[in-house]
Amino acid sequence: MSRGSILRMLEWSTMSASERDALVDRDLNKVISSALREQIAALVSDVRDRGDAAVCDALRTFDKVDLEPSELRVSDSEWDAAPSLVSTELVSAIDDMVDHIRRFNEQVMTHRGDWSFESDPGLMVGER
Image (cartoon, rainbow, N blue to C red; front, side):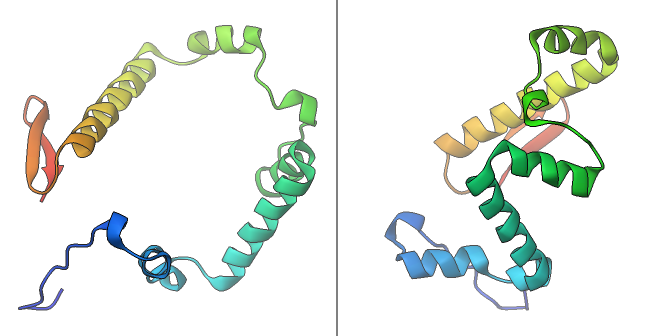
């Protein structure tokens, strides 16, 4: 922002559909090329039309993973075995991350404007 510029406060609930679209789409072309946006739209459309088969095709194309639609669902045995495949440190870090995100978003839902809280000793988070 340039010196002397004023931050505009927008109220989503009072904005028209076109104003909301303009806000959401602002500078999108600087972030995502139109060619990539078209590719994403085609992928989403394909998944809507063909479901899991399209997901499997995309996995083959982009991730080099060869699965059939019946293999997309994680089995109970795979789910039960998963914790033993990662370190306790990683599980702890993921649990901490989920806790931080949950507490932050609880604050977002109940506060407006300038607020902060100590998420962990010495870790201040919030919005201005």
